Length: 97
Image 1 (cartoon, one colour):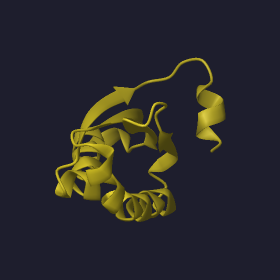
Image 2: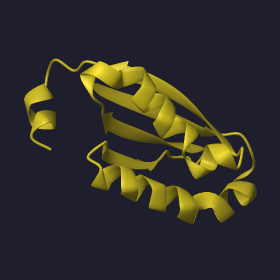
Image 3: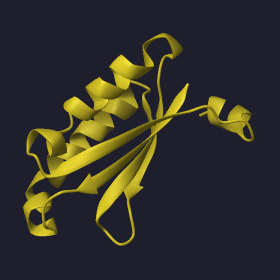
């Protein structure tokens, strides 16, 4: 199963910037675990998006953990929208990542 995570800043960018390095280090750990396929800021920079691969038997628990352990959430500067996603077209390409 795949999922999209939309991150929206709840605070002005000046309050988000001090947390960015911790957030990016956290994303690097998700990538090492094989959960994160891609990530990046939105344009304009009012949040970001993640493309995740999550275990079929633990979708909700995995997504909750991804959100809850993000330094952005711990610092209360952002909110997540978690969207489990079952791609049809292009799934074989994603599966190769």
